[in-house]
Length: 354
Ligand code: SF4
Image 1 (cartoon, rainbow, N blue to C red):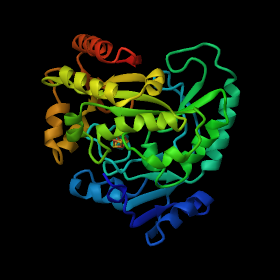
Image 2 (cartoon, rainbow, N blue to C red):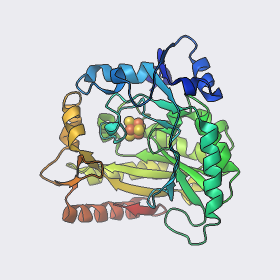
Image 3 (cartoon, protein in one colour):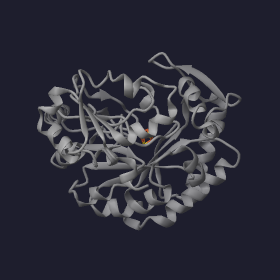
């Protein structure tokens, strides 16, 4: 999808404290014709976040609105799966609209991109946090020798990089930190990042799933073929590249669809990429409230995502009801998929699967 159709910013909701910062000014100058609406808090903008029923307006809001705010509490949270730590976010929200996305669960469903303008404070915080960890002496599945910080838990960094220089500043920061790496998952191919100099200290995880399923549930993203085609180029440009095989959605014929995808990955990447590629495998979790909302705009996706006969519920920490595949069956399905990975891409190290 053309970026111009992803982002055509007409209105920027801005906290005054964010406008006062150089990064806030940079974002405003990127869209000089946009109307600027002053807001007291990036969390409370009813016309953007409140109206869960107004599904038809979402995509317009995602395309035409941005929010500029200041990230108040800075903390790196321990993780242990995808990364060692989740870095304080420099953006949240997304202009894409994957039907299973957990990002809008906290901030309402249109959830346009919010950019945090206090990037200098965030990079200073991160430098100190990295320094405090010292050297990683015990290798783990996240990385044998670097502390890995996920910088894109609440947004898609490749797309955020079209809005401001926040992501570039983070990639530059980690390029100079020999004990740590930045990492983010993405479904958007932004070739501008190829001109940066990450020095192997940023790990991009391209999310992959079978093409036909992706066309149905990954709304407004780059195609799976485009993501695979980008892998060699990003390795060449100095990124570490991994893949997220996620979410794995169980349906009729799913295992053969994944076999086809893994063959595409094998055929579409060169030896240098293969040598360093690793994978995370994550089976779908879904959410009851999101299911209800999705029924209003994308019922066909829900036929794949909402399968009570093979799922079980789990109350999430934030109080909502999440669903995931039933325990016994899921274990079998994980094993089957890993067998297919072993058959089709034996060079692909799976960091974890759940
Ligand atoms: S690209 Fe990522 S953050 Fe954006 S809607 Fe899809 S899953 Fe959510």
